[in-house]
Image (cartoon, rainbow, N blue to C red):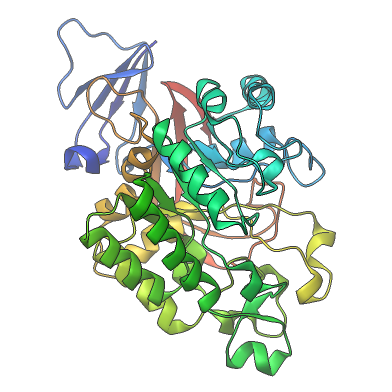
Length: 424
């Protein structure tokens, strides 16, 4: 099908495009930007006048809850929410049930997504069998099954020798290792950042050192093994300093941050708001500012949602007993663009952190709208004002601390490989 998207403001950071330009699509691919190819006749014309055209967003961590926790959410519900938020590719970590440590489970995910999904799902395989931290998984088979990398998610690997061997195997198979830096002997079963707020509220705490000590240990192993490593959801200013130094020294490391850590701090817990119970915890204002500095100086390479939908009951327990995680797909893009207004970042910089740069981390040729690229894109109306509420959120999980916030800008239409998967 030939599509002409006309009159829109095209933002494509990968090709340094930020101007009004038409887009021409044929057979699911971008075939021209600006001027129509000779003989081009559109089957469909989309009027994007007054709107922005962004590359489809790439989210580095989205928990879809299927398989295993379908009462919380499903592939169908969450990929639809992703499409409504302009996200065309989501990265699924291996801590599902069953765990993504065999090709059969990976195939199951892709089959279910073909039947019900509105976004592409890329899988990250388990680093150790059953995420138990004892025996290395069959990484080569997972790669052949389509995994873009391996991780142990937030399950601990206490034995440093096992971690070193896992890194060596991942490097041997040219797999990116996705690392969650946490010293579990320090974090224990904490639920809030160690500081004045956790002390006043009487909450079990997680010190900053639980992350920074793990970062230091993992960086030394990366230096020794040469594995390509990506640090997920860093939360402290000290981690930014360590990561910046490692990158300066030439280590093959990248890092991302969740959007909620760029906005919220431990003060937002207020009087035990369980929607603010996340791991890693919301930290101090100094940490939040340090993370924003990490975006500005290039230490952080991507912003992710870390989407974790929950049913209502999961958040009704006392704060420390509630399940951690936020539902964040619906608010990712407008909140990220609002961040550009609050910092020295441009709109193009923010879109790059949500599309092209995470795609590079995954090693995928997506997240841009150059000629020959797959036509994954969203049409965004920056003049629409809307309020976050259970009615406006498409995710099955309504556990958002941004409930009641008024946001500016909303996705009007999303295309995946040239096919409309969402339209308001």
